[in-house]
Image (cartoon, rainbow, N blue to C red; front, side, top):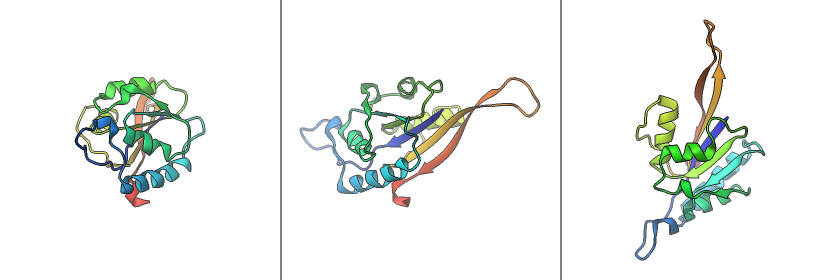
Length: 159
């Protein structure tokens, strides 16, 4: 199973009278989302499920893909890594899953899956971390073991 973690692009700072969920992308963030959306569309399978935080900045970022997506309340900014794994049905899902969400949750989830411990890894604004779960036969024999690989890490400013 592929799990693609996409942090929302650059957003405006919180303004007076505004909630965190209402923060919109900056013009730079719109460009970041567009570039990353183009990169992703060249690589994502048609069957990829797109799960997006209800925050406006995530909704705007995901729209750059031009594909239908599902808004998932459990992916809001205060969500923890376990909520993301549950939403994605990791690692049992039959299809790839893209989650458009927030820091520090995305970084903590990547650390948990790749290093086996929750750590505060940084995922840059607008960047993608593409993870793959697979079962691997040990060289010396024995039962297959689960393995998580980092397939790609891409930032919008490198495109």
